[in-house]
Length: 90
Ligand code: FES
Figure 1 (cartoon, rainbow, N blue to C red):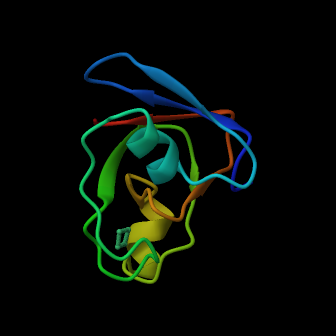
Figure 2 (figure 1 turned 135 degrees about the horizontal axis):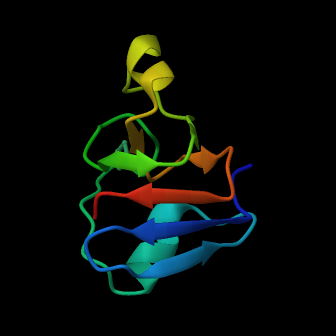
């Protein structure tokens, strides 16, 4: 699912609900979280973030198949989540 899950930021403990139709990056940005991004299309790699737990659903064109399969990092501008919660190293 693209939306409809929780994102937890491990460094601050803040939690955000990502509603359907919204991107993780959008929600974090609107909440004033300092996130790096550029293309918002999954092609530049600027927003790649380490995943601490949860299984992301990859929709980027930056990570290799192997990297996507490892599920330890994700492009937050275009990812979904296969679990209820995604914990990010942010
Ligand atoms: S901002 Fe370019 S890949 Fe996410």
